[in-house]
Image (cartoon, rainbow, N blue to C red; front, top):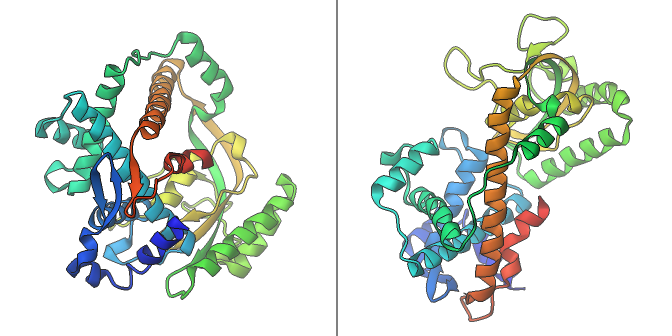
Length: 350
């Protein structure tokens, strides 16, 4: 009931954002962590950042979210704020801190222009820097993957380390622009995907093409959703292509572009998960893939090493955060205990 009562207020925000900007609600306490408040204003700031980072609204236009998407934005925002506060709290106890130059360098590594970075982005960068210092202070030893660990990943995922493959991809888009209820569009996309998955992998192409002609939008729909990015009449195009038109505008929304780039030989005849963009809900079908040059072992080692180091860092951070959350006093605004396990619901989904 606690979460539902909070969402009742939060879901009104798109309707009455001016009230939040002008009234006392922005100062209202939502959660208290070891005596430090997280306010509605804090939550608004984080939610705005996550919304832009995840959905990348085009030209400042608001994106219409489903109820599930709206709920997830607010839920994720609150979880991230609490985790950051736990990091800052522990760093303060240990006498750890970052100066402005440290934070600016971290922002640059994250690909963010420091001079224009919003306050919430600076906080995220600072927390990210402090995590490594806290883990070191807590006795987590430095991690370097062994040659065997690197080799095992290589043997298991060798097909993923290829470049310059050619692909044939079909696409369905169900637009949300102009739609009153994006929940209906999301449900329709899921239903189409479920029907496709009922078919044997080598039988999906024909059904996908039929669905694209009937339900999809855009220039590719009449061709059964087959993407034509070059002059090849059969639809083959290089998987690695620049996502820019001559005028600088993107060919595909970024989420769709990344999904195409991520296809490997193992994904042949597979249907993507429902992909969200500022334009609507998408499905991709990798009809075929050929070629592709194997990345050299020396280069692959570097990529695998970075991947393993990031993976172990995340695991250690979660291990420490769970322990920190259990020993901390996290309360809702009315004094009721905030369940520590709620902080890690996103990891459970993964």
